[in-house]
Image (cartoon, rainbow, N blue to C red; front, side):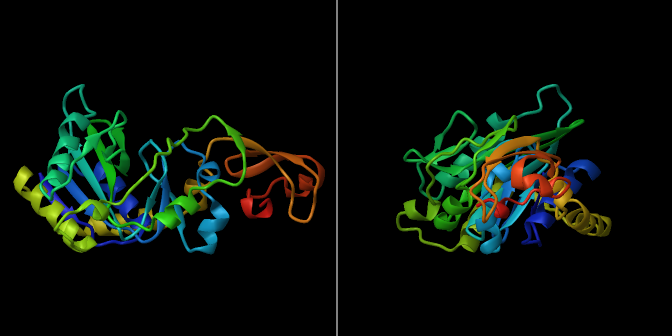
Length: 286
C-alpha cells in the first residue's frame, strides 16, 4: 500500500485524480484530500433535485459529480476525504468490512466512540460523521468517504435544502442529522490539518505504507480530466437522469409542466414553452 495527501484543493481535480488512479494505474493507494466548498453528487443522481443550485451559485459552492454511486455530500476545508484504491483479484471486491474498521480504529485512537451504520456510514451519538461510496472497474476498486471534522454545517444544510419538487427515477440521498468530529474531542483540540495528520500517520503505520509520488503523466491527465470532464456541464448536470417538475416561471403565476432530458428542456407548456431546447436552469423557477 502507498499513501498520498493530494496536492489539489479543487473538487474537480481530486475527483479526476481518483478517476486516474482507478483507471490508469495498478497501485494500491490510500488518498487523503480536502476540497474547497463544493457539493458532490453520486454518479446516478439528479443533481438538480439533490442540490439547491441557486443557493450554491450565490455562495460560490461548486456542484460536481463523482464516478461512484451513493448520495450527495458537502465538502469544505473542514471535511477530510479518504479513498482506498486497490486491485482485487477475487470475486469479492466490495470490502468495506476491511477498510471501514481501519477508519473506525483511527478515530478511536483520538478518543472518539464510533458507531457503524447499516449503510457503511459512521456516527457519533447517533449523528452522522461519515458517508461512503464505492466504484468498481474491472479488478480495480475505489472505496471512499468523508470525515466531517469541522465543516460549516449551515452551508451544508442550506445547499442541500431543495425548494423544488422533482419527479424522477434517480438514486436518492438518505438524509441524516450530522455532527462535526471536533465537537466531540475531549482534551484533544486540534486543527483540520492536525486531524488529517493524525489520520495519515495512523494509516501509514497500519498499512506500512510508502509515499506515493505522482508520475508526470498522472499530473497531466488529472488536470485534463479535471478540465474536460469533472468541470463540464455535460458531466455534472447533463448526466442527470430524465426528470419532470411543475413550476411557475419568474414573473408568472401560471403552473407549467416541464420535462428535462440530459439537462435539456425537451417538453414544456404555457409560458415555459419558449425554454424548450435550452439547458434547465432552476434559478428561473425559484
